[in-house]
Length: 462
Ligand code: PFF
Image 1: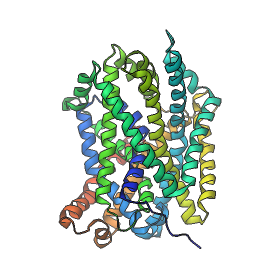
Image 2: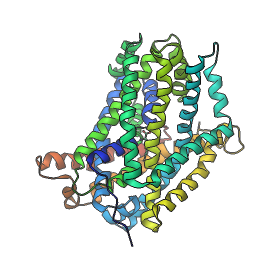
Image 3: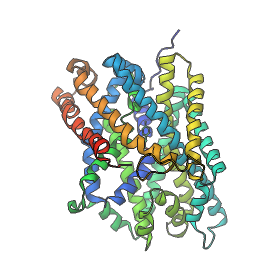
Image 4: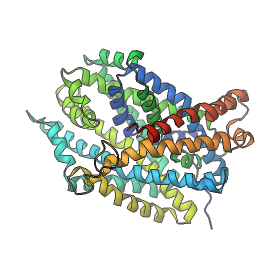
């Protein structure tokens, strides 16, 4: 006997859960860094255009395929388009599996820095202490990395175990408002710093002379990652939407909220960094530098109310990461539940355990472990962690995204998709016609360009 499919309790439940999936390390770790690397302004504008022209239509496409079929990604694509499309679904499940396996490692770092910043809040920040050395020693400590990522994986399994409403939605309802609150507090504090003006003009004043063509593709690639698109996470979340709930408004809200949070986080970080002489150069050196090397110290030396905001910031990172990891595990677990008829509790533990085996490889890949620290398949990427991240961001998400775009735009008929989007509240051309134009032409052309650049020109966007 199959249980009836679980549903979000309301549209707000869906919006919060999906926004929770979208807001994650991509917003707090990747976006500020690539904005920095690409000289801000013009890059941010291009990113906003990619989000609107490509991200939003694909978000609607994934949610509509899920809602229409009420199935997780493999079953959904098979039913919506045809049996052969199950392969695209499996590609998504594999992508979720790999992404989750290394994402938890960085998520685990937030637990470590939370503990450390609390210690400094209580005992004071030690004079002459090097947060760079601290980072190197924590990341290369295999035992510590395994413990942190195990804790994070267990939390993820713990949420997914309880299902759609009692697990995922409940956590999103509780944590997202908290996350927004912490971010607002930090923004207020950051805007009082000397570097705030410079930060705002760096982020919002476009200078197209500095924009390189590769930056456009990087912005596009990131719009997939940040919106959790290209691997069926939103198809899966869409399958828990009741048929009476609207996809159009929900998609717009998810996309706007994710973008607002990414921009806010960037304003906060740059305000802090631009306030300190010499910090720009230090930050430019590494992706993780900003979040885990510069900021921990600056909270205690520069930021107003930093000794309180420091620990809160790492709570924010952990919450943002958790609402993303649960969506990743849900993609994998719901596939096993739906297609292999295994009950949720068993499936969650099984999938969580299987993913963790690969988390071990990622966790020890900074410790000098043979093979896992030295693996070099892609140019310039060393170790299991970097290889996995490169493969997912550059190869899996864009190819998966391209397939989903083609599926919704070219392989599903107008009749099949109209019913999901049009509800008679606005003229159909507005709700439907514009979407169809973007999903058939603009999105495949843009995503196709990334795939060509990666596959044939060896470009690197991670
Ligand atoms: N959107 C997440 C982030 O910005 O960190 C990453 C992600 C989560 C991608 C879940 C895909 C996904 F299914």
